[in-house]
Structures are given as C-alpha cells and as structure tokens.
Image (cartoon, protein in one colour):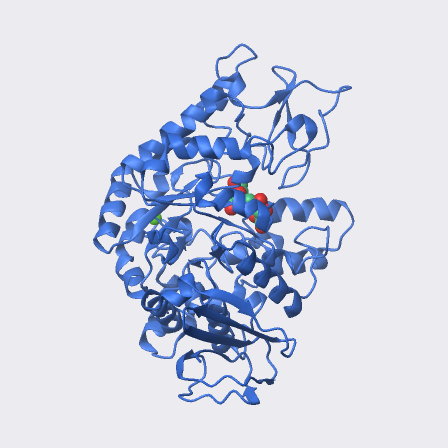
Length: 539
Ligand code: TEU
Ligand code: CA
C-alpha cells in the first residue's frame, strides 16, 4: 500500500460541548479548544476528529444539522473555526470534520421547504411514502425507539427518520441531494480541513421499501462518486462509521484501489458485551476469548486490501476503563493495559477525550440526571414494557452515552476547570483524583503511557506495517500477540484480569520497549503476570 500520513497518525476525538468552555456559559466551545492545542501537542496527536460544530437545534447534540456551512452559536463563529484550523496547523494538527449527511435536522431549510407540500422543489430531498392501510408504510424502526416513519398531517404522507423524528433521512437517490453534499464537503475542503469522519455512512444506500438500511446496493457507487467529486484530489483522511461492516465489507470501503474511504470504524468488538440479537442495553459480561478472536480476525483479514481503525471509546460508548478495565483498585494499571493492547495493533488509533487520563463512567442514580436522547427514549419505552426502573438504570449506567459526555477533567478547581459557570452536564465527582493537571505532574500517569505509545509508534514502522499474529496457547485471560516486520519481531503481552496470571514462551527478550509495571528485564519462561500487567518487548 502507498504510505499515507494517516497510516502512521494518531487521532484525538473532541466532543466540543464537553471539552473546554471559554466564556462561562457552561458549554464547551471552539475558543476553548484553541486554548488547549498546546496540551494536545504535548500528547503528540496528529489530528483532531471534531464531533459536529455546525448550526443545530441540538436534539441529538449536533448530529442534527440545520446549516452545514455555519457554526452553532454556542460554539462560536465561522471565524473561530478558521482560527482553529490555522492555529492547529501551527502544531501540525489537522482538523477532521464530522460529516452527518444520512439525515439533516428537521429545522434545515431543505426540510422546512420539503414539508410545504408534494410539489415543493425540495420535497424529493427526503423520503416520503403514503400510508399503507391507514398506517405506517412498513416495519422500519428508529435507532432511538419507535417507528422510523413519522406522519405529516399536512400532506398525509410519512417521512423516514432512522434516528429521531427531528432527524429526517436524506434521499440519496436524488442526484440533487448528492450534489448538495459534494458542495458542502468542498466548502470545508477548501478551508483546509484534514478529512471527514462520516456518520452512519453505511446507511446512505438504503432501500426503505425493502426494509434495507445498511449496506444498500448503491452505497459503494455513491462513495466512489463522493471520492471523485470531493476529497479524491486532497491528501485527507476519511473514516466511515459502519456498524454493519464485516471484514469483507470493510475491504470494499477501504481498499485503496476502489477509491472510496481511508478506513472504517467497525464495531464487532464493541458489541461483545451485549446479548446476542438483542440491544446494547441487554448486558452480558465480556469474554476475553471472544475479544481475542474478534480482534485477531480483523487484524489479519484486511491484509493489504484495507485498513483498520483502532478504538475503545467514542462519544456514544461507555468509558473503557469502567467497561473492561477496573476503575477502582487497578485504575491506572488497567487503563494502561488497555492502551498498550490497542495501540500496538495494526491500524490507525483513535483516542477519545479524557481516555488518556483514565476518565470513568458517571454514576447516575435517576433518569433526571440523563441528557442523552437515546437513553431517555429507551428508559420510557422499557418502563412501558414492564422493565423495572432499577434494571433500566443499570443498563444506562453501563452503556448510556452520557458516560462519555461528562465535561473534560482538567484540574481540581471547581467544575474540574471545564467552566466557570454551570456545566451543561454534571462533572464526574472523581475529578479531584482524575484530572489532566495531576496526570501531567506524575511521570507514571496514564497520560504518559499514551504519550509514549504515540512516540513509539512514530519511531517504529513495525507498529504501522508489521504483520500480526495472535498467540493461541495462553491462559484465557492473557492476550498476547506478535508483530513482525522484516527481521524485527515484537511481542505484546496483556493480562486482561485483576488476578495474577502467567505467560510462558521460549522467546528471548532483547529489549523492553514499555511496560505498565516497572521492569527493565523480562524473562519469558514462566513469566508471572501481575493484575492487568502489560508489556511490549523486542525479541
Ligand atoms: O451513531 C450511530 C448510531 O447508530 C448510534 O445510534 C449508535 O447505535 C448508538 O449511539 C450506540 O450507542 C451516530 C453518532 O455517532 C451518534 O452520536 C448519533 O446520535 C447518530 O449517529 C445519529 O446521527
Ligand atoms: Ca462556552
């Protein structure tokens, strides 16, 4: 594969609402981000994926866009955005925009026009169907609960919304819609952005009448057209959010010869702690065996015909240290173990804000504390179905999206240094112990593990380009693998457990590259592993 900058890059995701407030209104903003670029530079990242900052009524925190060429008032102005792009460039940091074009807000002028009637010239920008037997056209469901069809009294037709009813789906069959999207993408490319993260992009080829949503027949045709008409001529990163991707599908998106995207986010590992065929709220414990199988499959299956993204976290997912690590006694050890395990894999790593200091889930005790539309809708839906409050709150505590959205913990002053006003969402009370300032002061902090992982990646092509091989005959809780490039061979070992374990191999360690417990020498014959111990060695 031709090397591109994003093969060796590390990306940092910012959820602007919760990153840094600069004017005391309790809401993070673009000026706040600019004031923290120095911190991100210290961490060593190459690009920021910015969750949506466009004009939005905020039904789904910016994932409902009413103007793709302007900035939400709360976040600042288009001038602030230009400044962010140019200030970040001084640190060699690129800005990757969130592209949410499966749907718009119902307040977007296109939809306001479309609702005016069947003859409106924007009508066909969206997906309208007549009632069937006086009811919804078919069984399509919204991700946020209920039918995906909303009745419009004025015209007597239904429109499609795969998310909230305030997020009507665009009709990608309509050539004019596609042209609008190319235009807005080119608007941002001309501003010098570093690429796009494409929200639920595998839904754009949907065939509503056949109840096909993801991976529709024209999906790849549209993406190839997008590539030709927009970013194809720029050196940018494009990453598609694709919940429905298998390795074969991921290759269709990311094989460079097909001229579609750089890579996709696949979620197979993320779904391992939910009951089969059920929703994410239907919890089940993670089996390490399964995690090893799924990660190894993705590491090897794409080969030279595709590229992986690597992540544990984003703004939709619970905090990884609370989820699959230990946010109490082994907070630091387990957060570092998870970081080492992920960052030594083949692919482009993504760090979600606060992950690099081990931020944890937020302990809610009632629905009043929940902001997220997905959790709130589920709560009332399941209550009506007879679930107990306790059981529903357990699910939200484990999987609710607000876990990732609490304000960034900068220091131990009021509101964790996030705002001088009242924060839009509660700050996690553990900010006195877990914050950036403390991390920067402690050379053994989680932050410095992330910093080291980024540096080691830059210095060693084996991490980007080496082959991956899972070591099969280990204790179940031990996740161990080799990376190999030319004559160089590395071994990564992680004890995915709070109990001690053991790993044994005939390999001889030439150098300890890094470890989450202090050790300069490692003897691999019957090596005893401490709780959550992880190390990387050259053999
Ligand atoms: O998420 C896609 C999506 O399918 C989510 O509903 C996901 O299943 C859920 O959040 C997992 O907890 C994207 C965005 O990342 C999300 O923030 C948006 O709400 C959604 O699209 C609609 O734009
Ligand atoms: Ca603000």
